[in-house]
Structure formats: C-alpha cells, structure tokens
Image (cartoon, rainbow, N blue to C red; front, side):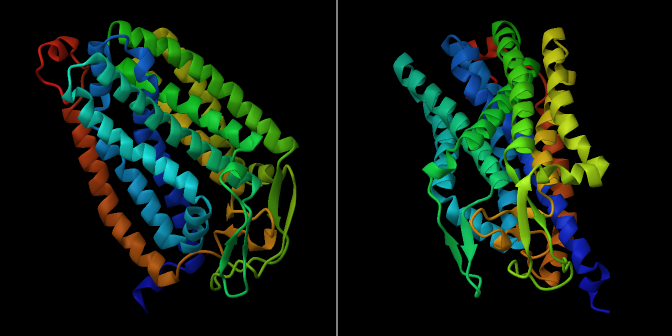
Length: 384
C-alpha cells in the first residue's frame, strides 16, 4: 500500500479544514493581543514612560506571534490553492493594506526611541495605533464578506474572474464584522495589559477593556441576528463527491437566509464556538472588573477563538462562497490539493507544529512577569 493511502482523501480534507481553523484562531489569540495593545497605546499610556511600558509588554513576543500568520497563509496556499488564489487576488488591495500595517509596526517599534523628542515619538505611537487598527478591521471585514459571498466566478478551465472592488467590501455587514474584530482584540489587548502592567496603565486598560468586552458581546450578537434574518447562507443541493478530484463546478448550490445556522441544528457540538465567543467575552468583562488577571486573559482568548471558529462552523463545508455564481463556491470537498500533497503536509505539521508550540511556551515562561516602570526610567532591562 502506498503510504499516503493510510489516511483516506475525505478524512485528510476534513483534517486540513480543522487545522486551518486552529492556525487562524492561534494567530488571532497570540498576535491578537499585540494588535489590541497597539490600538490601546495612545490611550492606556499618557506619558512617554507609560507608553514605553505598554510597548514593552509585547516587545519580547510580538515577532514570534506572527509565525501563526505565516503558517496559516502557507497552509492555505498548499492545502487549498483555489481558495488562496481567489482570496489573495480578489482581496488584493485589502491584503496590501493589511501588509502595510504589519510592515509599519516593526518600523515603529524600532524607530520610536531613536530620538528623544515628544513629537517624534508621538507620531510613531499613532503609527503603532493604526498598524493595529487597520489589519484588525480589515480581517473582520474580510470574514464578513466571506459570509455574504464574494463576487468571483470560475471558467470551465478553472480560470478565476473577480468582479468586485475594494470599496465593495466596505458594505454594512462587512463593516459590522470589522467592528466586532476591533472590539474583540481591544478586549484581548486589555486583558494582556492587565496581566503585564500595573498602576495607572493597568487601570486604564481595565476601563477600556470593559467597554470593549461589552461591545464585543453586543456587536457579535447583532451580527448573529443579521446573519440569521437577512444574510443569505449557502447550501449544497446536489450529491457531494468527497473523494473525487477538486472541481467546484460539479455541484449545485442554493442561497437562502438562515442557511448558515443549519450546521448548529445538524451538529449540536458546533454550538460551542458561538457560545464560547459570548461567554468568554462575558468572563473577560467580569475578570477585568474583579482584577483576575489570568482568568481574564483565558476568557478573552476563549472568546477570540470562539468567534473566529464560529465562522468556520457556520460555513462548513464552504470555504469561500461566490455571490455571482453560487455553483463556483469553494468547499472543503472540491478545492483542496491532491491526496498526496495533503498527506505530506500533515506529516510535516505533526513534526514541526509541536516544536513551535514548545518553543513559544518556553519563551513565554522565561519572559513571564510584569513590565517594571522603574526599569524603563533607568534605561535598563527593556526591549524598547
């Protein structure tokens, strides 16, 4: 027997659908609090020392946290090439804006303290703010548009035609999802600041985080109501070939409101994702009020994971629906790489992801503890 046939094709497709969700949720949890701290920087810190405390709370870990974005993007490229092609070409300007923000962030970290001039440092503080806000907002907008369907179509030879525009992404539901993303990561960043700082910075983080947690609950619930009532969901109406070659055009699809909630009825365990999103945010709100640092961060992380994973749970088996030709929508069963490719990637993932997790855990353990404001003032024991 050929080695890759030890795991059948449809199982590998399911495994990689789950792994993509885990990788994206891991990125949202880890780099999410970095982005949230960036958005909080001009408000949680009122003078230069306080802002340096905020920056140094994420200074040792922000670069390593971005590995999950690299892994997620690489996994999509290898496991779901058609999804990668449509998303990264159709959302080109949106992706460019995200990358611009992510590129400006390390520049701001490195250059902020090069000059001891208030105006110079203030400008870089606002660069850090926007480099947190822009990617966070656009990631949420992109997920909102994925739930509504993206204007692309496929020719019989699988050529991709994208008929949308950047400003077309900025529709009301997409912007609402963007606001959910912003509120969620501000909450997460506040939980991290409460854990890593003390004094006035931690107090302000708790205040802003409480508002963000409440907004996360309200906006996420509102998005769910709109998704149920007004946003058309997708449902496959033909037989599904789970083991055949990838060809999205070999199916029929219908669109109707509320279809995105059918998985929750058919598979009750999937309800855990949206429940975690709401209960986790409520727990973070309670933890911020009670000053329970680890409890708050854990609840915030669970909320972030639940909200991100609820998108995948709602859409399964769809990966990216098409709003102009539903038949061309990409699903788990008809847009993956070959059986052999998925198996080789799985072997590599099983070997290397535990190494990444172990190393990351060790780094967090070594760098545990609060940022010392006095060390910032003495110009010692700090990164930035």
